[in-house]
Amino acid sequence: MLLNATNIHKTYDTADGPFAVLRGVDVSLDAGQTLALTGESGSGKSTLLHLIGGLDTPDQGQIMLDGTDIAALDDNGRAAVRRGAVGVVFQQFNLIPSLQVVDNISFQARLAGRDDAEWCATLADRMGLTPHLRKYPEQLSGGQQQRVAIARTLAPRPKLVLADEPTGNLDETTAADVMALMLELVADSGAGLLMVTHSDKLATQLQRRLHLRAGQVA
Image (tube, rainbow, N blue to C red):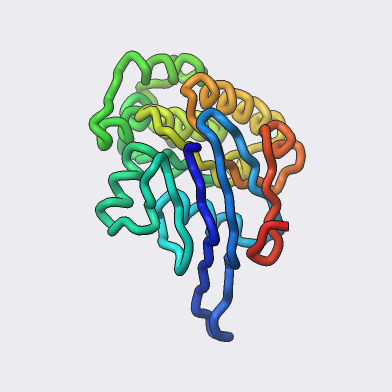
């Protein structure tokens, strides 16, 4: 099993007092498996994704990723996990505006010490980005920018890909194209995929679905 998160709790302080975002959530994922995380706004989807990605720590629970409890790691340990074992695709593209497409794609792999020019070129080709490698992000369409972001995430060959509404800023046709390419490349890489989405249409393209309601599995 690639991912096994058990009894995850997370509470935040608000002006109205403590707010329990997650209340004992379990989630598991095998290598090569895809899972859609669905639920209404405020149900805890993005919070759970951020905890699994090591962007935050749970108040209670265990997050085993490839045999390591990332919930027990310090900031440096979680940063190391994010550089190599986990890749994250956000709704916002988060590209580096001063870098050309070719360098944006390889950026994460270089940080992880896994820069592979041939693999990056393959990703660019499969994403239809080869003609745009010397352009800057501002010269690309939204769909092209998200393709760059996905290629950047896959460049270090992460074991787990996390995607938070990855097509939320795209029109329906572009979103469908980008989603198809992402699923194809994730499958080819052998990574597991956990994707937050509000779209039933997108969720049905993944192998499994986990629905959250008020911080618990519905």
